[in-house]
Amino acid sequence: MRTLSGTLAAELGLTLTRPGYLVELGFSSTMRLSTLGSLSYNGYSWYPADIKVAGLSRNEQGQQAGTLSIGNADLDYGALILSEGVADKTIRIWSVWAGAPSEAMPEFDGIGDDAEINGLRVTIKLSSGARRYAYSPRRIIGPQTGINVRLPAGTRITVGGMTVTLGASSR
Image 1 (cartoon, rainbow, N blue to C red):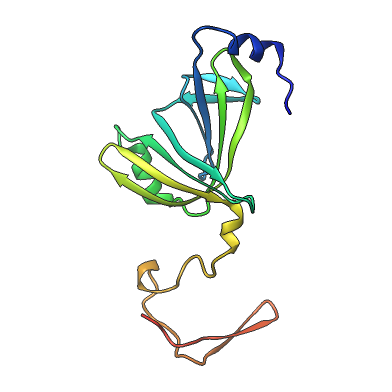
Image 2 (tube, rainbow, N blue to C red):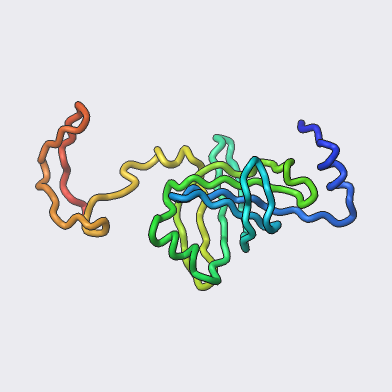
């Protein structure tokens, strides 16, 4: 059970409150966005953005999921997703109250799994950080990643003291 600070208790006691979210996106340059406009939290500046958080959940194994939708009116977020991708990028979300930003509560700490750019919004599927190790490989070497020549099946490659034998292509 959490003990509420005086600031948060006062905020929650108001007739009208303004809840919101803080979202940290781990791109090459970390982005810190807020649904409550510009504010300071944890020593960082958070900038206003059109953010919608939906379906945050956690199962009995502690795996998290949900979706994050960001307004893309100037196409910047879509361009960022297309250039850097979203798979395995760290994403953290806190719920926050306008009158008590220092009392932000962690809601999600995981990674981006997939993204969809649809009109004026970018929607990112969120997943537990533990998922990054659930599937191997996360990226397949082939024409879609710019590699057009494949070594024949049965070729042995030594990497870090481990020998890998290439199998037949399934594509």
